[in-house]
Amino acid sequence: MAEEKLYYVRFSLVQRIEHIVLLASFSALGLTGLVQKFVGNPIAEFLIKLMGGIETVRVIHHASAIIFALLSIYHVIVLLYKIFVQRVELSMLPGVRDITDALDVVRYNLGLTKERPKLPRYAFDEKAEYWALVWGGIVMGLTGFILWNPILAAKFLPGQVIPAAKAAHGLEAILAVVAIFIWHFYHVHLKLFNKSMFTGKLTREQMMHEHGEELERLESGKMRPAPPADVLRRRERIFLPVAALLAIVMVGALIFLTTYETTAISTVPPAVTNVPVFSPLTPTPVPTPKGGVDNTKVGVAMKHEIAGKEQCLTCHGPKGVSPMPSNHEGRPLESCLVCHKPGPTPTPGAAKPATGVAGTIPHALEGKEKCELCHAGAGSLKPVPADHAGRANTTCTACHKLVGDKATPVAGATPAPPAGAPGPIPHSVTQDIYRNCVQCHAPTATLGVQAPANHASFTNETCQSCHKPLAATGPTPAAGAATAPTTAPAAGATPTPTAAPAAGTAKAVPANHTGDGFKDCVACHGPDKMKPGPATHASFTNETCQTCHKPAEK
Image 1: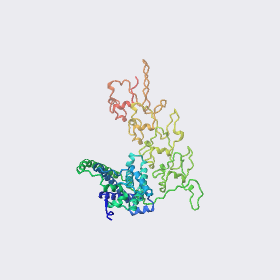
Image 2: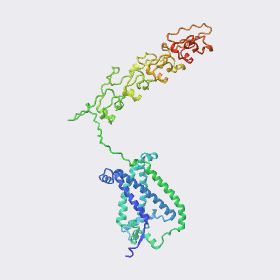
Image 3: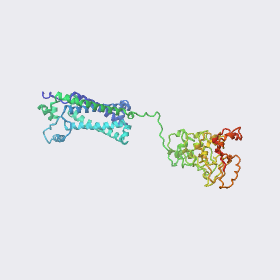
Image 4: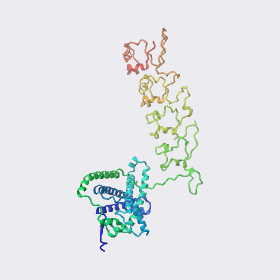
């Protein structure tokens, strides 16, 4: 009886508290993690509802993970203190002795030997459990924080790591929970009902059965003595600052990884109303079922060909020229041809189709790719309809096509432009005096030929988008254009008098106007002068005179 009452201290109070915190956090992690992994299972759904819903389950899971991580940091610091300050025996490290001890226990359990093996302070099975917990904690910590911060993880790791971490996290959780229930819980609490982690003590009989070698060392006084107090203080002066810095770094990393993202704990709210799933009808004509609908006669036939117009939403979207009905919104392009079949293809060159069908393009597209220059809003040359506002150039030719060969001029010929089409430029475009088109051809210009009023906003850069210069062998410049200087006569020959310019053409400057006294044109040709110019020239300056009036050949 006296022997049964003899107890040996196995775990201190701090170690027992550490074990209780580990037990609580691990249990919460296992429960809240497995119900998320097996969501949809009736038992899992019941437990989720019991705990307050999936969001509450995730908050509990993350809070338990933080507690587990803080406990791990504390364990690392305490372990380093025991190693570097107290210089305790590293009795938890595995070695060859553990293999022989395991074989001896198997032989004893099979009855091959009558002598019970005498095991040290931590036997081979306890070491296996400890290092399994360390390995599992590392795997669960890394994969868990990857799932907690998927965006951050994807910046440094391949995207495949995230689903791989999810698979590893769930499978390791199952392995850990099963190992605790089958191995640890049965072996420690059911087989022997070892309460030392809660009481801190073992009886002599339990020590003899589980740790015979440790019992012999305790009773013989062969335990390693503790270091002197002054030695401990000297070692602590070095260890404590380093340990504090290490703890701050690890806790800081934990705070960063648990607050960087919130994506993992956010759940998309359920839809308010159930949206019916679209199930496309079969495009193959089938016999109409009794009481059913013949899908070949459901949709209206298309008024155009399909080639080049496969993107139906360009014209039939909510803001298109011919919007689809509201009950068609959200349907994929592949479903259009299920009900709507192509109608007859228009004959090339035929009369303009019915209202609502796109008209043809009366000009070539080369050099005129920017449709909005002439066909934009109300102030442009030929505005588009109001329902075309906001459309890009790339969508124009989806409906509007060229008029066949009429849009392409014959090589070498200068065809007369059709009514409303831009006329050719009757003068050079390379000389500096002709590069400022707006000077002579703006709608408000008093010199040259005025442009139409709808050209008021045009700039020099847009003129040649429509108006092209005549070829070198083209026709004579139109009336009102400046004439080019005549060819100089041969040396010694009598100059031929300059022919009178055509009506409306700018006169040449006489050949005797060469001295400095003739540089001020306005002095003689301004209003109320000796030989005033036309009334339309009243605002002209010396710099603009030779834009049209050229010196005569000598």
